[in-house]
Amino acid sequence: MSTTPRIAQVSRVSRFRQQIRIGGHQLVADEPEELGGADAGPTAEELLAAALGTCTAITLEMYAERKGWPLQDAQVSVQLEKTPERALFHREVRLLGEFSGEQRARLLEIANRCPVHRILTGEIAIDTRLVE
Image (cartoon, rainbow, N blue to C red; front, side, top):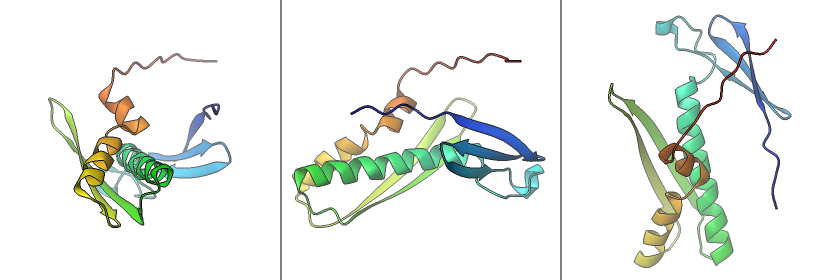
């Protein structure tokens, strides 16, 4: 089953504050006060880290459900560290449930296969054009 990707539409609300619309959902992004924003929402980079964490948790839940494994919760925290040379995501995964060592190892492999992880570690191209 394939779903059509929904378009993320972003528009300015006020200085640095952005309204994000995806399908019927609305989010807000902003910059912290020390950078001139109102801290009305997460930064774009925080949303990217949240996308990785969300995708990881959902992927683990789907896999465990399909296998019939007793995953009660997959708690994921992600922090983005930036240097001039690269960006490094620090991701910690806590699995709640009783698992064998083999199951835990397999779940770690699966975490590294979530779609957002694959996008971020694969080749990325961005096609940008101005429209009227």
